[in-house]
Image (cartoon, rainbow, N blue to C red; front, side, top):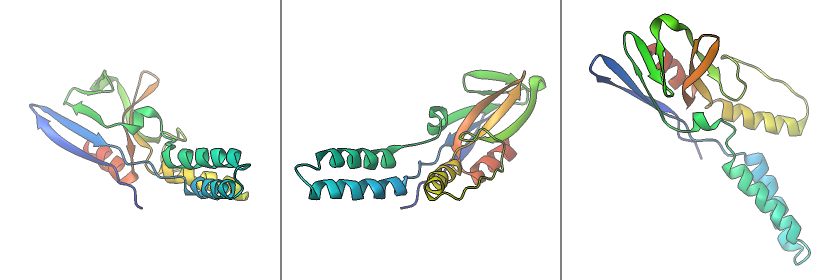
Length: 168
């Protein structure tokens, strides 16, 4: 089952361009879901003594299905305005003269794009694969000003993020 990708729409409001950003859906942690299913099934077959395994497997199933590694700010839709003088987003106004740069960052690794990670442990690989899959839709558009970086939109795949950066 494919996850729904991120997207943005832009519209004019007077002299401002308004961007509405919809984040992508979080991927499922299939490795944990499968392990949880096996543990749950084993617990059901060992009933009544397998009740603890049913509970552990059920928790693993729930956690693998619902876990979203992205920060809460990047999971929800965002709207921001760009005018010739400023950018308004995340409840703040960023004046054009005060902005040092506008960048793309990954909200999971907190690094600028692109990035790489390596391991040889199978279980670590499964966790890294899930984080990598999630990080593909965890890109944010950040404004750096006054020594601080502020995300004004997030939860985007690379295509949406670079398109938004180009349009802003």
